[in-house]
Image 1 (cartoon, one colour):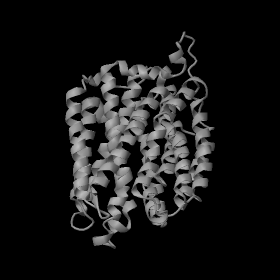
Image 2 (tube, helix red, strand yellow; image 1 turned 60 degrees about the vertical axis):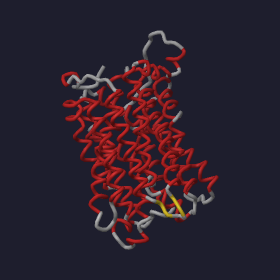
Image 3 (cartoon, helix red, strand yellow; image 1 turned 180 degrees about the vertical axis):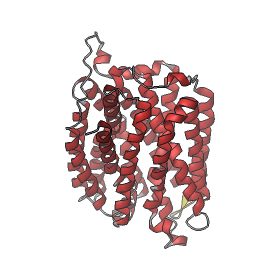
Length: 413
């Protein structure tokens, strides 16, 4: 079977399993389980807390001790069991613990997905920057399809979303063991204790350019978490004045337009990276976040529907030009011996520290502008837009990077 097709299946199932519940779990917890806003924020915060240490640990294991595809497969088999378990849980304390475990085993697989794909493509002699984005786009297709299945089946506020994810995870776990081996580094060079533990990826912080890059990755990771948590609740709140409107009735479907946009923008990454370089591409992402939040602030399911749709469209640039391009940049700047560890570090900064910052920071802002159960969504979204604008201006000033178009042909070392 064509190796690119096999990696397409890998990426499709990886994000299908996540898309089945990531955007809809908030509505399930709020409407069905009657969790408070703070409890919902805490549950989503587990994604960030787990990412503080698990991607790095899993990256170390994959780099030093066990084949990456086996670490990936075992993680998904465990996830399948946990997802079946949580579908029958209704109390907050138990729900929180299981979600934390799910986060601990799922979040590292995103970085492992990248490192496995990169390693296999490199071994086969492919130009990773050119070949990987069209493969990764199928992960987004999987995310969208899963969300649509949940939305159209009426499972947006039901436990079935976790069962769909559980089945996908088990299938992926088994499939992973059939992939080409991505063995731990076999280098015979003498290594320090730090290197043997896989902590050498943190040496990237010695480079001022990389240190600044990782810090701003964290700040952008916070922006990503904002819409994951509050997008659907924001649209659901329109039920008061726009009951029956498509954007309210199928809020999850509307949110997935963001992922459709993502599938288009991801294909433009090779062109933009080669022509403009990582700094300008990241600035485009940051400006897109400003518009993402700003359009939410002025949109509504009625006459302002166009602004909600524009917000979904611009999301593709906001997410891809940061997440995918950033991962490729880290791959290019790190040594093969620390590939998985470096990707784990990128995940730690974005989906770890960034997610925690976004979850609790946005929760504070939402509570601050909530009175008598009513949220001032316009002010809330404008504050988030201002946050993204400050990040954009600061990054333009602080990140020093000279782009050489001829140097970006592949990421082989």
